[in-house]
Structures are given as structure tokens and as C-alpha cells.
Image (cartoon, rainbow, N blue to C red):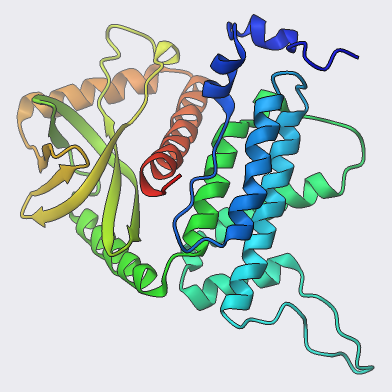
Length: 319
């Protein structure tokens, strides 16, 4: 066998060199200082598996499998740090069994006051269960979104080992943002950014993170589209994601400072011209068939989720 011949798939994907492939697909272990060395050392193998997928396509799936094993190890190591037993209480016969991973995840997250991350951790656990109990040989390759999923798993590991004081600050900051955004629910907004103005019909999502006492906020804004010039199915549109190191709420508006130091403003608008523009957008949207609407919203939701994870991965952890 030729172990150094690239998979033909990559050339068909316009990746001409190994370095281009590495730049596109390899996820490195970016972890903050409180993540144990065992985790960092184990994840190094993941990066190599991804790099060698240039020669063996299935290594993309193997990298995901290895990462899920590292995540499982991280949960158990964090449980030990928190003095949470990995075993169930002895049964009537004195026998002891290990806790299942789902129960351990719940106990760790409850102790850390990270209950709102349960869905993400259990999603990862479900993927892990399907992989370790296969009924046949299958692989997903790029269809399994290896880079995006691995960035998510790296983020989860980092969050798991945040200091308790950071988690308390993050929960307080998250509550502040959630409460502040209520005043802008179902309101037509104008976003001022990059010396431009965008008409926004919804702030659809947000995430907060606190590390080393520094809080960041990610806001997802959905601008009004001009569907008089194109069909919804032709819109390769992505939400506007604001990466903010500070956020303040005031009457009828929001102000913030981006990571790059730029000031942004969001304000409620009652301008009739803006209201008419929103009305035109809604009318054009309703004329689209339901399948097109569903596919567009599904793609928009998925791309937004992955974008948020990419920002967290790229900006919040040290390599």
C-alpha cells in the first residue's frame, strides 16, 4: 500500500497541497491553564489524526472518536477534582458499579452551576455512544463536520475546567444580558457598525463567557433582507455576529465595544420607512414555499451555531 498518496477527494475539493488541507481541517488543542496536562497531551493525537486524513479519509472520523474519548476523560478528571465519586453506592450485595456517563455529566454540571450546558454535553455523549457501539462499518468524513464538532468539543472541555469564580461571574453576566435583551424582543432595530447601518428584525441568540474575570458577549443579529432583488433560496446569507468585550443597556438601545475596540450601537426604530422595509421583507418571505423557508432557517440556525463555536475556539483559549 502507498501510505503517502493523498486521497483523491481532496484534489477534487480544490485542495492542492497537504498544507492547504492542514489549514482547512486541522484543529489544534487550544486550552487554558487550568485544563490538565493529560487532556492536552491526549488531544495532540487528535491533531495528528486530522493531519494524516490527507492520506486516509477515515481518519477524520477517528479524530472525532478520539476527541470524544478525551472529553469523557475530562469529565471524569473534573469529577475527581470536585470530589464527585465515579462509582454508584454499593448495592445490597456490596457490589460497586461505575456511574454511567450521563449521570456523571449531570452531577458535574450541577456542582459547577453549568446546567445550561447540559444539552451540549449530552449531545456529545450521544455521538460518543453511537460511535463506540457500531453495528456496521460507516464513516461520515466531511459530512460529519469534523472541524466544527471538534471546535465545539474543545470549547466544552475548556468550559468544564473554568474556575468556579469565573463560572459565577459568567452566570451573573448571562442573567444580565438575558434580562436586558427582553426589552428588545420583537422590536425593529437599527445596528450601527463599521460606519454602516443595518436594519435588524431579531437578536436571535447570545452567548457569554468569563475567563480570568474577563467577560465576553456574542450577540447574533438577523438583518432584514432585500428579497425584491433575489429569491430566498439564492441567499447564502449569514447572521451578523457581534463579538463584544463590554455591553450596556439603556432606554431604547444597546451599546458595546468589540474585541477590536470598535463602538457599536443598537437602537429601536419606529421610522415608517424602516417599518415599510420590514413589511416588504415579511411579505416576500411569506410568498416562498414552506420547504424553502425551512431550509433557509435551518441553514441559518446551523451556520450561526457553528460561527459562535468558532469564535469561542479562536478567541478565548490559549494554544
